[in-house]
Amino acid sequence: RAIDQDPRREAIVGGIVATCQRLGLLVVAEGVETAQERDRLRGIGCELMQGYLFGRPAAAPLCAEPNLAAGRC
Image (tube, rainbow, N blue to C red; front, side, top):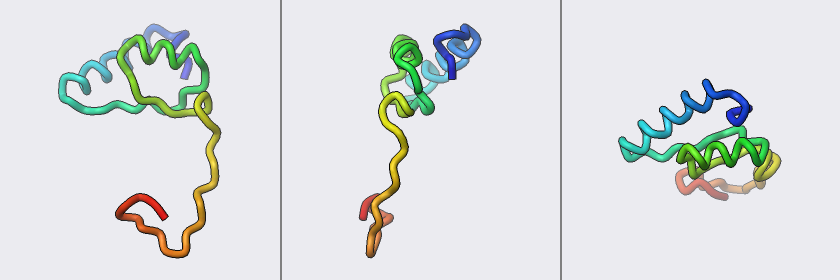
């Protein structure tokens, strides 16, 4: 939260993103609520994000026989 307003948070997340990139790992930023947060995260190299900015939580579809291994109904 508020990564666009706190240089300490930006430094911490920037370090995590840089480390993961060097290790070949994907990073997903969660809890992105504002366009300013999104822009700051993009600026430090985070490409995958989720949060209220992109969509509110929704109820999962009900399944008669869920296929959990495939991650779908």
